[in-house]
Image 1 (cartoon, rainbow, N blue to C red):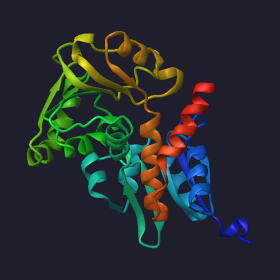
Image 2: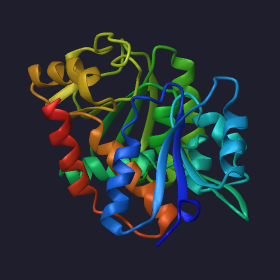
Image 3: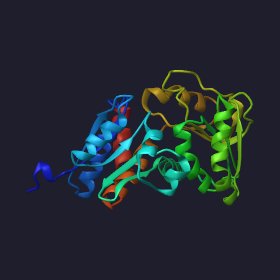
Image 4: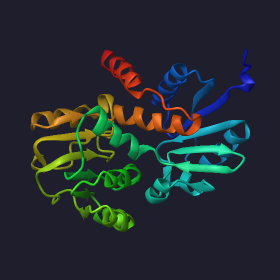
Length: 283
């Protein structure tokens, strides 16, 4: 019988973090794959993320998922980085071992898997509008580029931030034959096949920050939020003829990617996503 001190510890760190469904998701992954581990929530002070991580690692923590607002800080704390974390400049997954702190970013892989596998929509050759230029967009842009859409436009209230994100990914986009552009929210063009909302507008209860003309007929409109926060965006998308999708699938898929990194086994994310969606719909 395994004692509690032998069980590997993992956590999700953020501020706020009480709402996170990651412990539930990873508990299902562990049960499914026969892994002995615990997964908890870590509320980190806004000025104390590094200290919280050091304390968790020192107490035997093996890995940590990182959520807002610490993904950029986590990037700086990692002693070595995956290529996708280097490109993103942000880390959402840390692994602690004798080699040091390894930083990865599984957000983009999770988003692409949800769009292409769960929603069954191919990104190759399509036009994508990505709203927002913060950590959420930085985390997924590289993976979106790797699918080789025809073009990706990043729209943000502060155009200079969108331009900085484009500049950081310019070479990678050229290598994959993808046109990158930066615009404001009022002049981002029309007729996109995919609209991805990576802003905090939904979380703050704000309205959709772009005109409905950005949607092509039958476009997929995805909000990275889920639950009540995503409802206004999803309703708006449906009203304008788009296929609406929330961020629950992305959440489960990025968690599956992190779990595979930590444990060396890939869980069946589809089963967990179905269970989570059923629970979410039941309230």
